Length: 168
Image 1 (tube, rainbow, N blue to C red):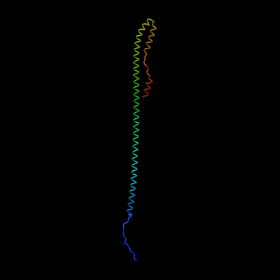
Image 2 (image 1 turned 180 degrees about the vertical axis):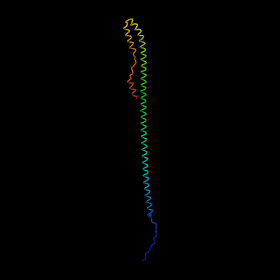
Image 3 (image 1 turned 135 degrees about the horizontal axis):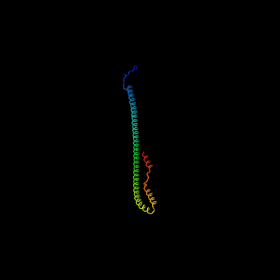
Image 4 (image 1 turned 30 degrees about the vertical axis):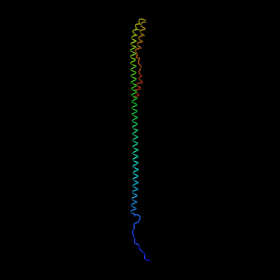
């Protein structure tokens, strides 16, 4: 037993990985992890850009709506002003028509008064000359002179000027 037994050396595959394969696996894992982080960052940036575009579009739509509202309000004010102008024109036309009717009525009344006065004048003049003399005829003549003044209403030019100035 003095001899030593020498066993042959066999390379048996072990359950452990080769160090080069381990290094490749580690580098591959780090690469996949870094690509995942990079992809996540790109996705977050893209999502933020889409949100910013949506906010921008919402602001643009809001400003367009506000501008349209201002335009509609201006149109409403213009229509209201046009309605006021039309109403004032109608009032003015009605006033002119009423003034014309009053003038026509006054002219008719004046003609009737002149006709009545002339029939009275002839009757009274003859009676007054025979009864009282020249003094009564002068009174009748002055009375007929008063009837010749226009009986129509006076126009208020200041009110018309004020109304026209409000249109300017």
